[in-house]
Image (cartoon, rainbow, N blue to C red; front, side, top):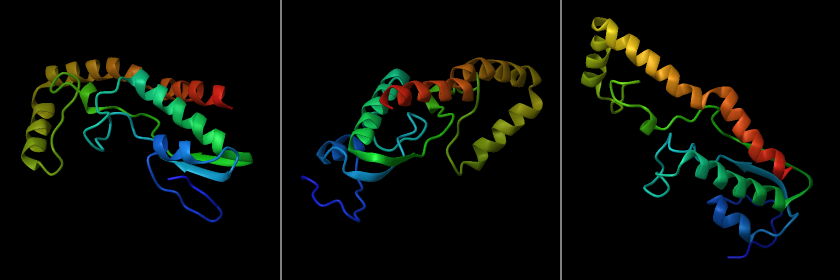
Length: 151
């Protein structure tokens, strides 16, 4: 599918596939919401990307976004400041995971927090160590390193 006559068109699709079909300097506005790394499971593919691979994919997509933009075109990127994948959370080590709506598990975790001070302190300490890798400053720096070379 070659995209022709993009005037007044909304093009929806997977950026890696769609952008390659759009001619250079032909789009006035790109709005994109890249995947939130492994923080959200969209489908079964690409769920095991390392953070470095995730950033490399963003570089490729952002380069294509800027390639298709006309001079003075605009790009809007919707992205989390702190994407933390569930794989980072180790059950009862640095956090708690449970299924949405699983009230019984939630109550059990709350009871653990309230009744086992040593466990709570240990989880907080481990969580803080882990979160340093995903601090707002680090994530913004990573995103800046992606976007700056493209500009």
